[in-house]
Length: 163
Image 1 (cartoon, rainbow, N blue to C red):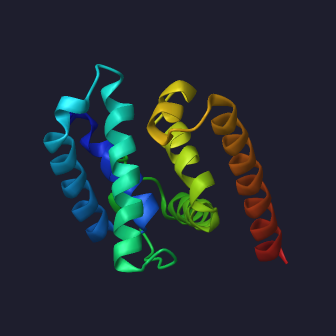
Image 2: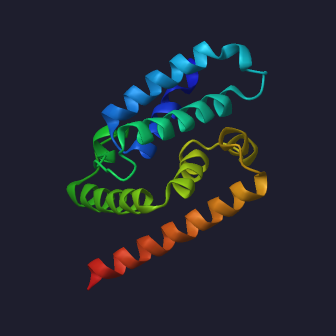
């Protein structure tokens, strides 16, 4: 399960929207995974772990009453990019990342989670279906809707800043 720690933290960060809380959720998720390891049936370990992280995030949000709270996450400060681009390139990149991050954060949770699993964690549809407990067709539908909403949001915000 340790090789999937980054994926677990990434999903938790996007779902609870706070890096510190995400660490708490991931720690609780790993404890749950350890406690219920006898229930693991040899399916994909990443999907199994991310299902636990997803459920722990939802439980945590209900318990804390923070379903709508959002703390901005600075993607540039936490990325592992090699090399240093010039200032203009950095400004453009920061604006683009900020725009996409904001649009992803505005997505409903059911769209945001499948988008993160597919696009950021590069999980196959079958693993996402296993992690979320949804039928494959529902995963594909939600992913399609999430991409469309993300594209519309980015286009609207880009046109809004161009004026």
